[in-house]
Image (tube, rainbow, N blue to C red; front, side, top):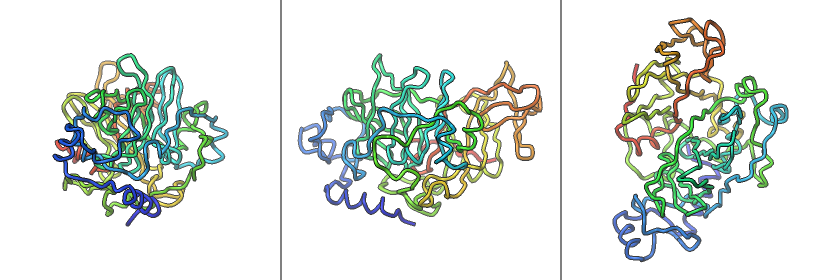
Length: 382
């Protein structure tokens, strides 16, 4: 199935700009020799002589610099206000810090891709790449400076390439690494964030705050401009990289990287087993899966899209002991105390009620977009 107007607009924009993928080696040499770059650099102050990837791998996604506008002054609403326009299964990015819990609806992020925010005193960037289905939260602090991020209008292996407004260095979203410019080689700190359903957020955080649709931009919030893109039989858009045939390219995976080990948990497996006790990089973890979260990339209305569920990862160590978890009925319990746990890692009943497991940084991606950056990934199989 093809994208509808999003794909048509992007292809038209690329054709109009004359920016198409080109040979890697020549593009890099041209950059070093001060010759023409494989894209229009007139709007940039970036140091293109410094880069860690072939510049030819950076292709136009259609819009120009900041053509997809980041949200720099986010406004927020109370649960009661957001209830008027968010439906129970709608996906939101949950980020909480310092007692401040916030929800960033994908119906907004799909049009902006970056929110520069400060949560509980911590400067953060909440990011979402629709073509990779990748939602990531970053600490915006780097070497004593708070960075502000915008969109370059470029993609690398279909993934969002951001830039910081302080140095105009370009950053790969999936890796959190600067790949072009003065900050090349620097890495942002990943922060734990989850995709959950609106119903879960409002029930768990009644005092939480929700990113408002009053963004200062006129967008069709609630509508999906990438209709049908996440069809399991579809092909990635604007992607010409290698393909790892172990899974289908558009298979949703939950990923974890600890130490030198990368693991992917296919949603098709998680939906069946629901709970996974594993050890990654020497750290005992539990992966939890629940239904009740709609795809942002399925039907024209996100609220009406199919239920793809969501997953989260937590450390299994609590109070000096390692817990083992299993599904029981519609819920999850640990074998040691028989306490009940939810998708947020919270004990909701039993001896451990009120306790919270430590979250592990994880991501939800389409397989193709993760595998190209992490080719040695272990795929979990029960």
